[in-house]
Amino acid sequence: MGNLLTQNTKLKKTSKALGLRVFNFGIPAYKSITGKITCPFADECIKFCYARKGAYIWGNVKPAFERRFELTRSSDFIVEMNKEILKKKPDYVRVHDSGDYYSKEYLNKWIEIAIHNPDVRFYSYTNSVEILKSTVLPDNYDIIYSMSGKQRHMVDIEVDRHARIFTNRTELLKFGYKDTSEIDLYATKWFNETNRVGLIIH
Image (cartoon, rainbow, N blue to C red; front, side, top):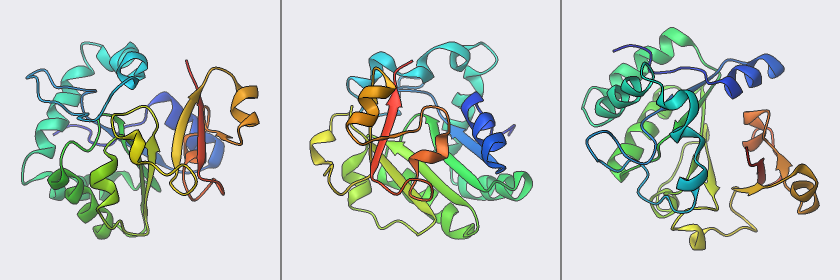
């Protein structure tokens, strides 16, 4: 099946800085080659999505995203991911450095994986606010709602962990957000005592 868990540049940097094994899982950004939507509630984020450019669309990379997407739709996904976790031994898994929870059934597969692997912490940025808010997550799972999707009106910014994009660090800090532009885990509940996650546009 190839590598299911990989490390993008930011996660390599995060792993090195914190002395942790942080891996990511990605599927195609926004939609697959066959036209299936992988980010059903994406909105303005489509314009600046880093996963639709650069290394993510290189000829040797794109097919791997498609293969992973097809696996998520099969009954083998949970078994294969559990095997990969056993092999790679991650401390943290970022679910979706590209793509999103495209259905409740798919989200439930990830929850089952997290339950099977209680010593691993899982986290995601997501625009799929409604299905996440109607789901009970295990303690080793954290969600950061993106404020650039179609369901952003459902995010309670006083309570929910959420991410905003800023043009510079001064502005980000002025509004009380934690800068997670360099170290990815600073977005999570385990490293961020606030519910405010800030990213500088790049």
